[in-house]
Amino acid sequence: MQAEPTDIAIIDGENFDRWIEAGHVEKHYWLDLWHYRELFFILAWRDVAVRYKQTVAGAAWALLQPFLSMLIMTLVFGKLAGLPSIGNAPYAILVFAALLPWQFFSNALSASGQSVVSNRDMISKVYFPRIIVPTGSVLVSFVDFLVSLVILAAMMVWFQFPPVWNILALPLFMLLAIISALGAGLVLTALTVQYRDFRILVPFIVQFGMFVSPVGYSSSVILEKLGPGHSYLFYFYCLNPLVFVIEGFRWCILGGEFRLLEPPMLLSFAVSFLLLAWGITYFRKTERSFADVI
Image (cartoon, rainbow, N blue to C red; front, side, top):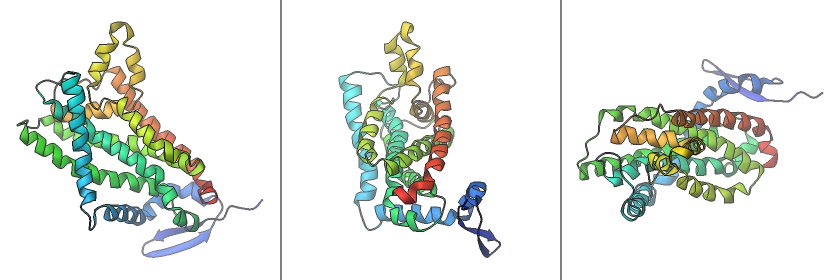
């Protein structure tokens, strides 16, 4: 039986040693991620530079997209539908607090899903841990998230809505948003390489996901509409990992009652980590054939 050849660069101080060893990739895959960490930042910085360098549209779109979405949702859900806000928070801030993680998740999902196919020449010619490519796309979306924080700060000043101490927990929920986006992105990346139809399905998945996530409304509205007799259906709703992330962002920015330890919310929290585990497992299982099918 012919051994699987693998050409691996191993760092020992300042020296690089290369050898061919069967099964080396499986044993040292995660160590290779550290060895190739510079490639991760290079790919991420390249995508950031392409979007923002010598252009106004890149930075402007990162600001306009969530802002215009906030205006539309505030009009539809807040004015026309008359849905309530949380406490004394303006409805516009209620919506924008949810748009921050949602826009990050949707942008990361779209970018990571196309990342391997867009780098097909590099994938087919050079060895490196393929998981670097979709992970770098998630980092690029995080840059857009940081730009969007400027709008949030301006809105809080405009509405004279000072931040509460809960905002100190925002990095924790941002980390959870990254975990959710990376897990879903890895699954979608592998599926897109194998089945190119997923390039067409991604916009539909993103659009559908926004309506089943508590972006334009609070998840408490869903629980109230279901009523006591059908509250068990709320558990199915919380299978969406973005429910916990979005409500966590709202709690950090708006304050109010801490409902994140309720069983349905904890279910949404658990799904985020299960999604990451599935994403890594499925991606590792399929990436061996990327160079052949891409």
